Structure formats: structure tokens, C-alpha cells
Length: 410
Length: 224
Image (tube, rainbow over all chains, first blue to last red; front, side, top):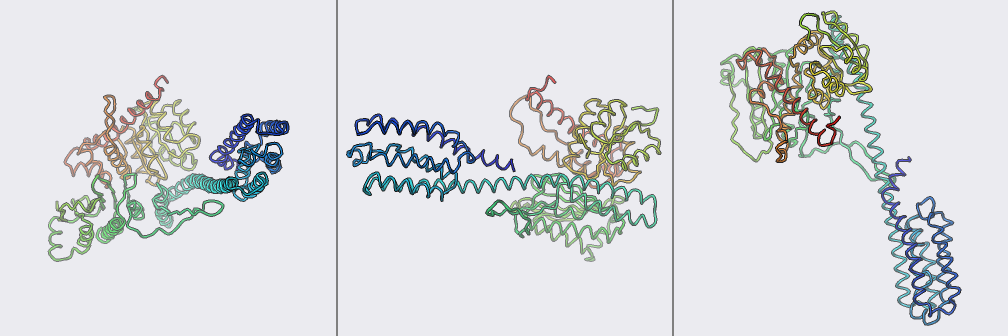
């Protein structure tokens, strides 16, 4: 809580109070100066001098009162306003008629505004309206008639103080929002740090179970396999947070609310890694460049579907025990995803034969998907080294380089 | 490296369960486990005292992060080989450890045989790559290449680049091929494959050291 208070005082409140302090001292000196230059317009300069002495002492003595909102008590505000009002109402008693009728300044002159501004900064526009009303009334009484320039000045003080009060309120509210958002962010960071530690511990245990159960064999081996699957799933989740949660912030009255929301299905760029990471499993390795690989959402979804189809194909043709490797590469102008398995590979000639007989369903469907994206799919099979499917998608589909998806056989 | 005696290994892990299991496996297979440590500070002190050949290091350590331990110990003794054994495989950490001198990286889910093999290879200076690490290293080189060229100043180090052959080898590692399979496919010797992989790490580590020195000089820390 102390931190939030500090943030608030730092950004808006403190400069305002400082400005008010300077304003009060300067306008006090200005009021004295005005009086001195128009000394002969006053019938009873003694009273005026006495008033200025009080004003001088009061302004300097109350400097600590206008340093911040806590020191600026209601009692001080009331007394301060009283000093200003007395000054205004004393004016007709000490100055000559000429001074009053020509619209000459009141004794405290613009020092009065400082008093009203203190209300505005302390309590917002309602306080400002409350304080400027008696000032307006006193000014009208002092003048004796609703003269045009007096009414003009009165309205000016009224509107200005209310406006400043309102701005202070808005600034204060947005600062609370900011402070709240900062707090939430800090809390989230801390929670994530704790989660990382816990996840790390869980990963250790899962890896340990997997390791030991292989040695024990039998039913334990099955447990170990399950632990292994969970270990991979959790590791993918923790490493780099590849499963993003969309968050939206809302501006509530007392501060920011940040909540997870359903991500809209838009066509903006998405991180391809987040779509492919779920394919990683105990027997499927996942290699990526360690930084977001962004592609337009439709292209990324198609590519992910193609990778899924390729992995299904691996399981179908190379067996459930086949291992597979996914590699994402982020080239300057294209994204390359390779899916490799360690199956027996496709013997020379078989591919052409299968293609001729129209039995290359999966490969063709993968190639079709990629061609629609302006990319290509290549099937590479090296005897004894499994089969590789290399999927390429250009980053900018408009650069329509003629890429045909001819299968490469070696 | 002591060619005669057993390979002297130190195991650093904050989980006693793991530390003991790994130490036991290593000892049973003829390695000499000269020390173990449960936190970063302890690891640095003990490694300096006993001087192991190979450090099997977890990155997630209390008191001092594993990456920092790796930096300090390799700085202290460049002959030390570091094999990172990590549970979560967090990218930034792993890449940072590799840049600051680790030559091997293995996930904790690896089998005992894989671990023993990795320690053996690390001891003779052979880099131990997982396909995941190869993908990260490839990504790091591409990022270095796409960064804006350093400002025209003669002293600026150029970003390291991979040769076409090195890229090819690294891509095959990332696709899960063994060094033997890579050698077969590219019709080169096993030793050449190892050299290529070693070079990819060496350049990154050198670049990292040059950057650090430059940073230190810029900040006026060179007298430290």
C-alpha cells in the first residue's frame, strides 16, 4: 500500500501542491505590490496594512499546510478561505469609492484563487464549487452591484476552479488504475516465478519416475511411460510459455481489471510454435528457434494441420514406436517446418509407383495445403534414415515465387 | 583431462534425489564423482577446490543461477567441461549457458545410458547436442545475422556466421540424426561432423566473450 501512495504522490499530486505553494507566495507579494502602487486610493491604509501583515504571516506560516493532501486539513482550508473572504469584504471599507467603482482589485486580489485551488486539489470539483461560491458572493457584495467585469471574473474563478478540480479527480483515478495495474503485474510475475520453481520440481519427479521405472519394468514401465508423456507436456508448457492466455484490461472505477478472455479468431499474426508445441510427446522431439515465429493465422493453422497429418502418417507407416522430430526454422523470407521419422524410409521407386497408382493420399493432401499458402512440401527419404517432410511457407504470400511442389526423391 | 585415471565428475543439483541418483549412476559406471553441490555458491566453491574434469550442472539452482555458476567456473578454468542437465529446458537459460561455455545439454528425461554417454563425450570435448539445442543455436545465428550491422567502427566485432556446411550439419542434428547418420548422408567422416558441431558452439562462445569484453571496456570495468 505504501508503494501505491508513493506512486500517486510522485506523478500528479506533488507538482500540483508545489505549484500551489509558489502561487500563494507570489500572489501574496503581488497583492502587497498592488496596494503599494495604489496607496493613495485607500481611505484607511492602516486597516489595509494590518490586513496585509496578517496575510503575509498567514501565507508564510501555512506553507507546510500546502505541501500535500494530508497536511492540508479542512480546518486550514476553512480558515484560509475566511482570510480571503475577509480581505474581499474589507476592500470597500478601506478603499475610496473611485477604487471600487472603477473595478479596482480587492485587497487579496488574485491570492483568493490560491485558496479556492487548494480546495480543488484537495477534494476535486465539488469542493472547488463549494469554495468558489462564497468567493463569488463576497466579490459581488464588495462591488455592490453585479457589474459586468465583476460577474465576468466571478464566473472565471468558478469555472476554472471546477475544471481544475475535475482534472485532479481524473488524474487521481487514472493513477489509481495505473498503480493497480502495476500491482497486478508484479503479483503475476511473482506467481510465475513461484510456478516455475514448482514446475521444475514436478518435472524432476516425473523424469525420475520415468527413469527408474524403465529399470523396474513390468507395470512400472507403463507408469513410467505415462510420467514421460506428462513430463513432455508440462515442459512444453513451461518453456517459454508457448500457450498464451489472452488478457484484456478493463477500466473499472477503482482500478484496472485484467482478465483472461477468449482469443478472437482473427487473421493477425500468431506464433507458429504455440500451434506446433502440443505435438511434442515422449517420442516426438520439438526443436524451435527460441523466439516467436509469426505467421498469419490462417497460414499457421494450415501449416499446423499439415504437420499433424505428417505425424499421423508417421504413426501409420512407421509404427507406433517410431520416433519423430519436428524442426521449425525461421528464415528471413520463409518458414520451414521439417517432420522426420526414423522409420524404414521409402525405397527408391516405391514413391513413384504409389504416386502413379494414386495411393499417395496423405502426401498429396499435405502438398495441396501448402500450395494454397504459396509454399511447397518436399518428401525426402534416405534408406536407413527415415523419411523427411519439409514444409515451406513464404512469409509474404504476395511475393509469388513460382514454387512447385515436386517431390524430391533420393 | 586425465587420460589415465577415471573421469572426475562433479554433480550440481538442488534436488538431493536427483543428485544422488546421477552420482550413483556415474559411480557405478566407473566415473569418479569427486564432489556434489546443492546450490550455486557451494558449486563454485567446491569446483574451485577439487577441480573436476566435467561438471554436470542443473540450471535451476538456489542462491546463484546455474548460468552464473557456469560463467564463473569456465572463466576460472577454461579446460573445465560443463554438461547442462535441465528439467525444464528453458530456452533463454540454455542458450545463455551454452554461450558462456557449456558444451553439452541434456534433458533430465534422458535415459541413464544417454547420460553416461553424454558425460563421456563431454569429457573428451565433444559437444553434446539435443535436437532442441540445435534448433536454438540455429535460431540464435539467424537472429545475429538479421540484427542490424554494427556501426561503422573498426573495433566492432562482426556477428558470427555459420558456413553452409555447418548450417547443414546443425539442421540434421535438429532433425534428430546421429553424428554417424550425418556422416553417412553428407559423405564425410564422423570426426568432421564433430568438428562442424564444435565450431558452431565455439563461434558463439567466442562472440559472447568478445561482446563481454567490449561491454566491460565501454563501462570502464576493464581494470577489474
